[in-house]
Structure formats: C-alpha cells, structure tokens
Image (cartoon, rainbow, N blue to C red; front, side):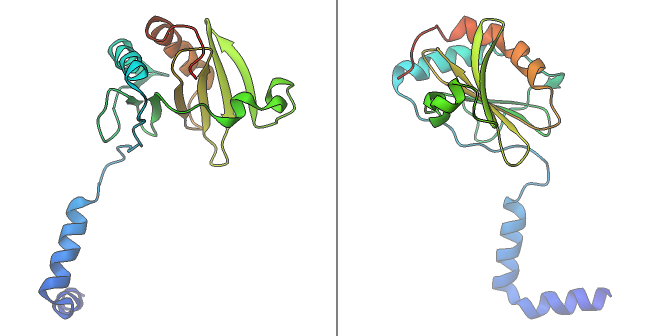
Length: 169
C-alpha cells in the first residue's frame, strides 16, 4: 500500500505536490470558527468596542474562544461556537409585520433581563438573535446544542452596559 501512495505522489509531480502541501498548510485541523466582521460607522464601532471590553468570559458554560479574523466586533464561546457580531445591519424580519403579530413561525420578538431580542430559527438548526431598541445591532448565532435562554441571560448585562437604548438606524 505504501508503494501506491509513493507512486501516486510521484505521478503528481513537484508543482502539484507543492500546491497540495500549501493547501494542507492553510487548512485548519481544529474547529475554530470563522466569521464575517461587520463594518459599521464610527459611532457604532465605538459602542461595539465597549461591548467587547465587558463581555463575559463564559456563555452557556462555554469559555470564550474568539473566531477568526480577530476583531473587537466579534466574539465566540465554545465549540460548536456561540458567535456574537456587533454592528450588523438591521435584519429584515425586525420590521416584518408578521413577526409583530406573532404570525411568523420562524421569528419572534421578546426580552430577557431588560434587553429586547428578535429570535429567528435558521434552516440549519441554529438560532439567530438580534438586539432591538439599542443604538447598535448585536447579533448572536446559537448552535442547536446551546440553551438560548441561558445565552440571553449571560449576555444581557454586557449589552445593557455597553449599548444604550435607542434606535440603531
């Protein structure tokens, strides 16, 4: 079997082998999360930086493990990761009348410990939560294995401290 592997490698040739090695070197062997970093205006960026300074070390019993690329606008906890992104755009469902009347089976509004949230069930089993009535939108993606209510309780004090009430848009 080893001779097959060596023969197969030899058939690839040095350029192809170099490309494979480069790809393998760039791939991640761990489960660290990656996330798109929001790009809000200066005022919202300041609020998000303040939030980053007061976020809890644990959420739903998971230790903080920030996603790549590292940014004060993103945070993560555990694996599979609970991901927080600060300074996101307002989700369309936030102004959907079906959500306000309770007629959307995948989205509902509510509050936990003084912070209002839009909760949206995603097709992949995750739950996406976005703050409402705050000067910056904070979005939290919760894997199906996490306790959504525990996540909201763990994050409420930080959000209240760093992101004042108001309308973000």
